[in-house]
Length: 188
Length: 381
Image (cartoon, rainbow over all chains, first blue to last red; front, side, top):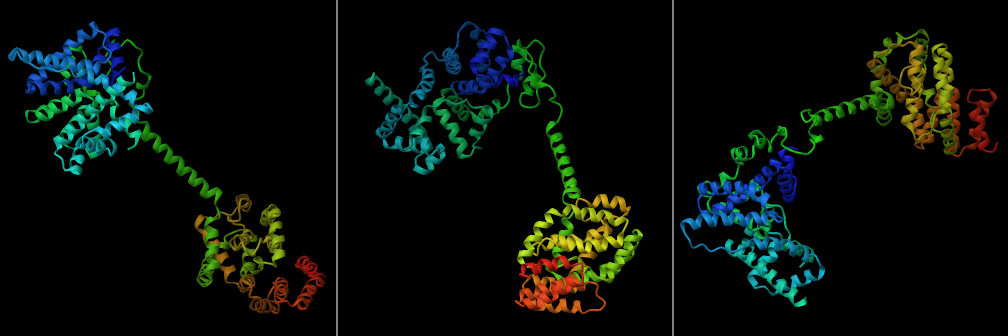
């Protein structure tokens, strides 16, 4: 099987082929799929292109062994955490005080919530939760998810700043999750 | 707010490819594409941070760094050939022996053969062959019918064409067998009027239309006899074609039927067999010219004009032409003209005069006797 055929497989299949059958092309496919994103995360944290290149390569070299040591179920979330931790480790060498937040859990949270929202009563709750949002977030969420506008279009439509639109949508979505989680706890 | 649209708020989608990241960061995406990317970024911290990092460090060459995968890294640490990595975006790569434990993929064979262009070329050739076959075998009369319709619809230009075409093509027709030449001469002396009798009364027209379907095969047989008895065939056909003429409602079909007497190839499916027995070697151009001649002759003939007048209900005018023909001492179509004159009288409500003419045909044992008797029967005689 060629490398381009490996590219069609899911992350879990590629990991299995690499760890169980030592198919290096499966790992190469993972590298092609995520190396540019890991580099982007690294360059965001390290603020230097060359250091970010070295860091992302080192992360994948470590993965060669780590994947065989650990059983990884959510590869993307795990890779994101690994990449951030690696960058924090580099930063810690120069600046010992590094604040980090564990956002990787959010990625699993997304998948879980998508399944729940498919249910009818959750959709109703979601609608009422959107109504309870602040005006700015409610307007941006509606334009973005219902009118399928891009950030730029929402900004033009609302006369809000582009960064305001972006943060309103991000914060609005986070608030929706919090409200739905609270409702779920009350019901259970 | 549609609930169905809300389902996608927490949906997971595939992470961005290097090209998507590049286009989004460069602002080359349309709004719809940008929306899809942004919706993914809201649920994917990995892509979101990556895009933010690349945007923030775009000036430091961060965008250029993601455009191509680091082939040397994979080659050095995984043993993957550099060609393999470069080939993932172009041609199918070369498989390294032992690089995989599973069986080789069967879809890889014959990848070098350009199947799509070959299939397209084969399809075009097939269509051309089918079109050629249909033109020569299934629709051999299309051109003739078109000419016939033109002759009927535009009588004056056809008359002009008739004159020129006749003088031009008579020598060519004389190259045929002797029988056919004789017949051609006769045709020129007594223009084809007799071969295209007009429509009958509505009742008779319906009856004859029914008969025509049954007698098409006998017509073929008559046509096949032409190679041995040309003059006889001409006579028989005069009678036969009068019998087989379908209806006034189908002038094109009527006008292309008579040329069967000349033995050329535009008489229908039976024509190729006739051509072979007559051993008449005609080029396609000559055949088309003959068709024009015959169609033009028929259209220009006075009897045909009378037929047209009769078909359009102008019985009085038609009757005058038929009477001229009836009393023309040189005419050999007196009986046909008499029969049609009788029908004009019927159309004008002059039953007695019609009966006189029909009885004349019956009494002189004319070739039109049978039809005259039919009309008399219909009139209650």
